[in-house]
Image (tube, rainbow, N blue to C red):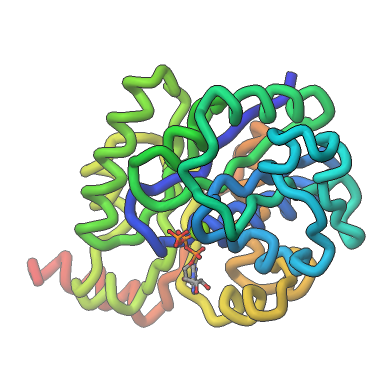
Length: 265
Ligand SMILES: Nc1ncnc2c1ncn2[C@@H]1O[C@H](COP(=O)(O)OP(=O)(O)OP(=O)(O)O)[C@@H](O)[C@H]1O
Ligand SMILES: [Mg+2]
């Protein structure tokens, strides 16, 4: 049985595509067969983050139009065995795909892969509905900002209404020094507001930007970096392993935080 997981957020720019590419690569690195589906038909990016843009020939729209077979549209990652991308079309009307069509394509894809991971566009319109239609599970990505958390809450409600009941949370772009200085919500604050289980925390880190610009997932390009470890941990948790959460806080920060707690600061 393959697992069909949608990566979604409501709010734009919080890291959905970053999570899809890096988590996909991390799961493939564990020896699983992974198909990544770019459901962002308006502004596709997943091919770029994976460094596969020059190898895209066909897209999901060509498959739907009967212009190629599904297998022909899949771009194989030569660096990671078992990782493929189903690209989205960039230049066509993004309203031209319907949820039922997405469902057909994802269901067909599910036959050959352990994981289907769908990168959703921002918002809650047609593109969002296309990306969740076949999903059995969802990973909600949020940053520790009030607008992102509010949108995440809305999306969780919509997913539950659609029968996607297995929902986990990824908190992205954590800045420990800001949390320590009480300038940013902590992971605990976000969890309390959203009430869904946490599956990963990812630091705000330059290595993510470098890997995006190089088109090289962190597990390949910078496997020793903190965010690479964060993605590896999420992959292992999805596989059912118990992996402790990373603690990004500096020692100094820990002491400060403790002192503040003691003195009520
Ligand atoms: N943990 C991180 N540390 C540093 N930069 C990050 C991190 N996560 C994401 N970014 C940066 O934030 C930007 C937005 O990320 P990304 O494109 O993954 O978001 P998105 O949710 O897919 O956006 P959209 O809603 O437009 O599809 C990118 O420039 C990315 O490099
Ligand atoms: Mg995106």
